[in-house]
Length: 495
Image 1 (cartoon, rainbow, N blue to C red):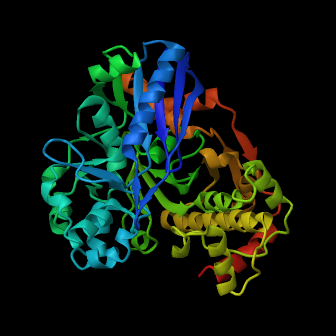
Image 2 (cartoon, helix red, strand yellow):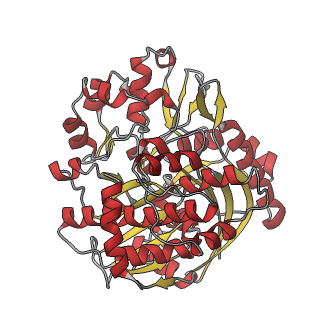
């Protein structure tokens, strides 16, 4: 029996989850949960990384209290694109900006004047978004930030947390690919692109791959939390989406790569397929598709979609008048509401970081001459139906790129517990949806830690363990004809 601790830290919350692996069956126990959110200072948004570090320490202490001092490994995964800069003394040169901060607004066009869009995509294979690390760094160059002149190390967020725990600076591959600075062919930092953007190549650290033992946690940390001094810190796929995709319970003998798709449903929706090689051509650039690094040299061809962020922000507004509002209440109200009254494009820029998401959705509908949703049921149903149609739109794009039909979709992550949305997705796509596990990211994190300590555990084996360990629920399409009709209306209102 082996026991691992996964810290799965997303944009809205973090969890400490213990995984016990025994006879190829994994069991989970969440021992600690904490909130995570942007901190607004003036007009800027930042992450409170030192608070996240203290929450990790607290999670370790709770592990020791429940399980004792012995553990086989600890691993951390987080969201992508955000980073820190360290000076010559390995101290932060400034606060870590949140990806929704407005410092990157308008920076993509400025960046393309220095390096063309085509050249960046041909090197990295990564989609263009203002939140990308490359754009954030370029905005610092553009504003002549003094921080860059004294910076000696660049680390993505999980790499920085790993450094705090071990004193070792590495860059894990899957999280590094979200930076849009990795050469997709060499799987290493692109010296040519880094130089053309005006950055220092020496900032960027050695790449390590998912399932790498980074080292032992610092002795003073082990003493503080009560863990053994030789406790391993292991790099899973440090990008949460990459760990989640590793835990997809697909049967490799039943479906070839490119025939099955995945949807990791959370604050962001990550929708795509797993491939053996990147897909970089004029069409994939036109559709702004991304080629992120996966486990065992796979590529995650995907599209990032604004996901449950929409409903999460609405819930914050509604809770001001209904403090006891539950997610179950929102889903029920949506289920009781008349369907297909109005549509939104989830990726419209006005939903990026509005002061009031409810008003923003209503303004979108008014601007597009649609019915204006008013109450919780109408607004939430508008969100859920629009997400299901957006997923269909992306699946059709992926199918056109691959010249293959997607036969099945696996839905994982926290959003997979929304059964109404799952049924909408099945109806919209007209294919079977397999749902679970909810904690796919933590599962992938834990099993990639196990992979680091056991060479016999490969990606296919990881997925067999997932199928053996967690219930998977099927959703079948029910009313596709109506959805086909309304899909055309969705496209008209979201051009």
